[in-house]
Image (cartoon, rainbow, N blue to C red; front, side, top):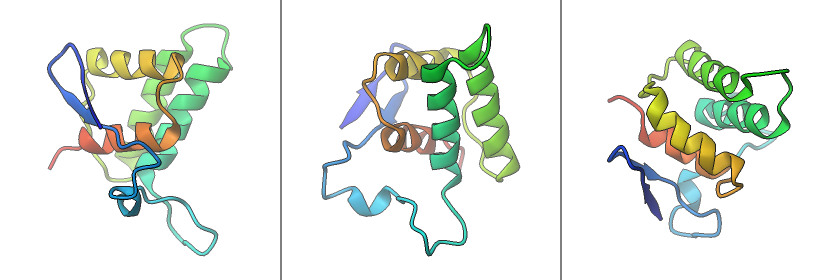
Length: 111
């Protein structure tokens, strides 16, 4: 399933039940020594948006935290906030889970 945003960009957000894309969804395991940076950034973003831990600007903080974590991990993604705002609206509306958010972030990765 691919989602097209108003900005024209698409987000390759596979549904978690799709067996064809399940191997690409790098799910964390206890025997892994390194985890997927996109998955962790997705969880940071999702938690900031849904739990609203700060008095204001939770979404902006989650955006900055996710981008900074990916940069530190050596991954570069498109950082245009308009693109992320649409993703944040989908998170707020509970249309995406953390695996789908990670897939979306991965699809925005620069080559």
